[in-house]
Length: 271
Ligand SMILES: Nc1nc2c(ncn2[C@@H]2O[C@H](COP(=O)(O)OP(=O)(O)OP(=O)(O)O)[C@@H](O)[C@H]2O)c(=O)[nH]1
Image (cartoon, rainbow, N blue to C red; front, side):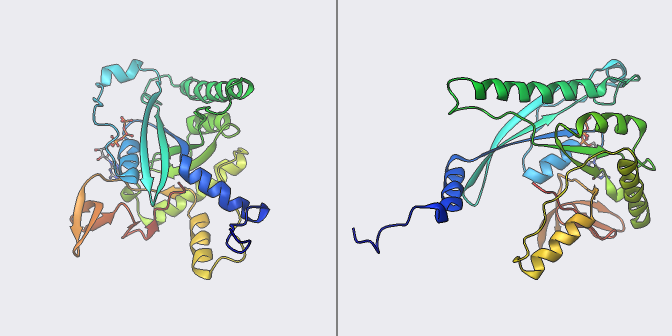
């Protein structure tokens, strides 16, 4: 083969090579969802990944919940978007915050995260390092109830124990139950609370200076929306000839996949 026809392999193509290898192999991504029962965690996860991840789940009765301890429930699925495969694992924490005394709700969650780090370290130190399964938790979606004024003492206790172990993304659940002003106020209070308590939540990386203006604007809006106000829905509605996952009210439709139309709050999730 002539020199000109030969593909150049070198440092310059390194990002390409890494990219190609990763695309071929696929990625592993583990997302943990933490929050009280009924905040819409399953609904949001189902709406985000367009799957029904919790088909077999039954609703426990109130009596059960009073004494319930937090458990870990793991669901794995393969998803593919434009040829890129992702092995997505959702770690749910049913029972979190349900018990009358939830002093220890955080323990199950932190123990699980620590165990995964330990397992990964052990596998990496072993002889067969090629086929390690990465079960470490990459991101934790923490659901804040919409009916409070800020983070509760319990949220602060949990977040203080989690923030050095995992990337935390805070979301205000069921944001369609709040007005624009209420959302803004709650966001300000939450941001003040995490600052006062030295809690580190996930920060988006700096946007490259050579990105186009539209991308930069999107990036600014995304950063300004933290903590994200979210609305989930598993109902498909037809609005203006378009099929959306939304929630229907007498006064309008909340598009769960794009924005909260009467709140002008955009739902972006950094996945
Ligand atoms: N108004 C409103 N209701 C929602 C939203 N998301 C979910 N719901 C409703 O809230 C109820 C509970 O939703 P789930 O997704 O089961 O809540 P969960 O947090 O997974 O609850 P557990 O499985 O008990 O932990 C359901 O009736 C949903 O339809 C939302 O964004 N807004």
